[in-house]
Length: 349
Ligand code: SAH
Picture 1 (cartoon, rainbow, N blue to C red):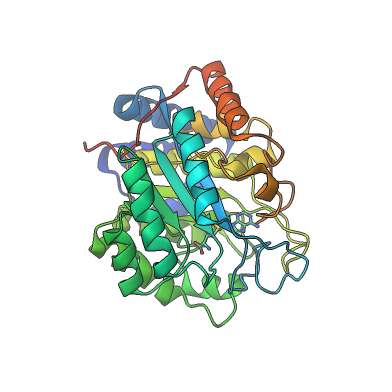
Picture 2: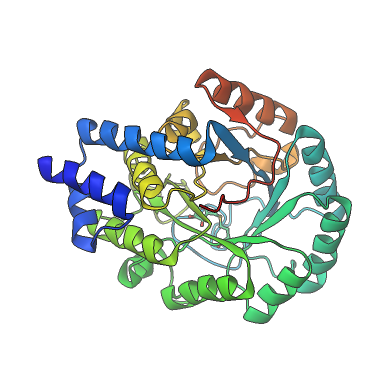
């Protein structure tokens, strides 16, 4: 325990620990240490971002996916999954509604749906940027070729969110079929960075076969990669996947990791995810109070929200966008934070 106090101090002052030290810090997790990390993380977060919370409007553009990730509810092999894709007009309507509500970042997320080729996406991106020039567009559409990433960037995409899922190649192979490779996903992240995107990586907390060892590797990878954003949220099983019977991740461990990430990289954009809110009605508040500074309310048309089911019991599937923003606004106010109308770029420090 006293060793770990030393590690917390080192992390805060040097923004770096060895792989072994991250593992020790993870294995030593208890409520005292969590409280200490939380306290330091909140202070660092206050110094960089004050009590503001950035928002991103999440538009779930397609539930079609050609991949078969073992954990994901919209995997190709799930024949029970309901499939939909939004039209260009529907996506633009979501943006217009979002802009009125105060969103200045739109995240277009979906399964790897070949329908959304560059020929479809590039004109859409140009139109979004033309109609909403003060907004940032984030894409979260999985692995694509360098040429495609380049074309989407030139058409106006500012950011790309591609969780690395795990920094351990063998662990990656436990979560994905052989057709998907860890090396390829990691290469995509480097390519996105080279092209000029603000890049987000991330991983699920409590995914099957994950131990402190894998988590320590995730932390070390993030420390060296220095993403603009890092999305972490608990793994939540989906009933129609091979991982249906696995237990999910915990809110406590997710918050512990959020605090560590805040100390490691003070300006990191860290969302308190919908998955946190799904596991615990106060999950997103707990995430913010552990050092997160971003929330991603749902902007998708209500009619498709239940169909974009990556995991079971997803929240906010019956609410209008306005309600989602209003609800989060109140929740943040209740804990002393406030949503801002801003693109939410990382602060340079
Ligand atoms: N197709 C895109 C978007 C994936 S959905 C891509 O490949 O990047 C966004 C994230 O949701 C995934 O990266 C994964 O980390 C997470 N996710 C998928 N299934 C989940 C589950 N059952 N529980 C929690 N998170 C999940």
